[in-house]
Amino acid sequence: MFILKRQDVEIVNVQNPQNKDQQIPILQYQGQTFRLLNMFGNNRDEALTLWRDLTDNKGKACVLLEEPQRFSVWGRVKFDQLHTAPTESSSVGTHLVQGCLLILQAVYFDVEDLLGHRQAGSFKQDLLRVMQQGKFAQTATLIALEGVLSINPLNTVQIPNWDESKLQLLLGELHRLANSYFGNNSFVDSAIEALNELPESVSVTDWLKKTPKGKLWQ
Image (cartoon, rainbow, N blue to C red):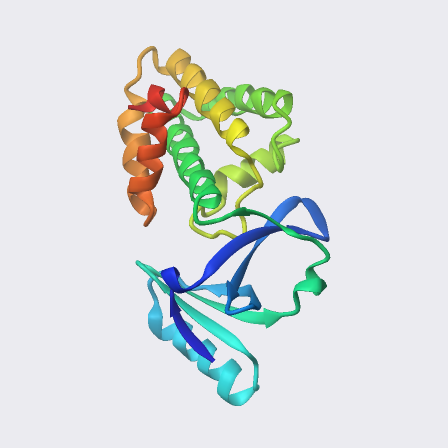
């Protein structure tokens, strides 16, 4: 139906009616609403194949969204089918969560690689206490936290619903914990380098420079 660029559309998050701790991305274009069907990374050919199959062979109303190093296919839905109103715009909020997840995972992998499996296990327990005390969505148990540590932050379907206050708490406590494990802030460089995976890395680093806990990572 449509092949669109990121600047052509608005993407918002809505609460998943089946899981109140999860939000799902919704694309809006010219009064129409589309739900994410599949994400393809930088594989344009696979995205085009699915889009053409759905539109030409199955008569579905679909959008192929082209972004830097990322292609996705979205299928049209009626907005009232979602049972809820949109929350924050993913053009800002979701990218910040993605950036903080990349930082979190980079720090954890550094602990595991440089300090060993036992220290990594201890670090996860300390991190779990922080998440539980802060009431972070999708991290109530160790298994749930391990799931967050292993998801792909570039897949907006999987990322948890954390607002800016949660991100500030995470950045502050993560820096404190990592500093206690490493004895210095040597972990910061590799954590910030991990942001390069995100197409919106510049906006995330700009946000870090302007926020209280984000400045710890500069």
